[in-house]
Length: 64
Image 1 (cartoon, rainbow, N blue to C red):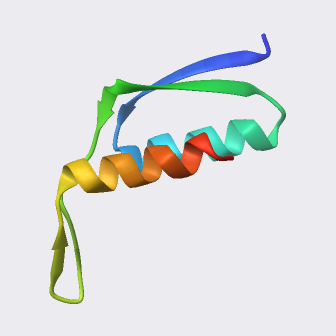
Image 2: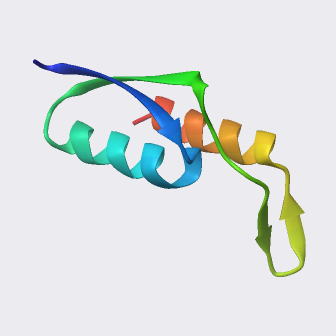
């Protein structure tokens, strides 16, 4: 097996970490964007909607 399909919770945590880890081992990955999700994020008084968090992490993974 050289290709993994990834889905689950949370896009900004386990999906991100798992995808980066298996790519580091040389596997090809497909993240099913509609089969994972996240929650709103908060930082220094700023709130980032879950949809933006989700898309930001998916776009970063797409470029790795």
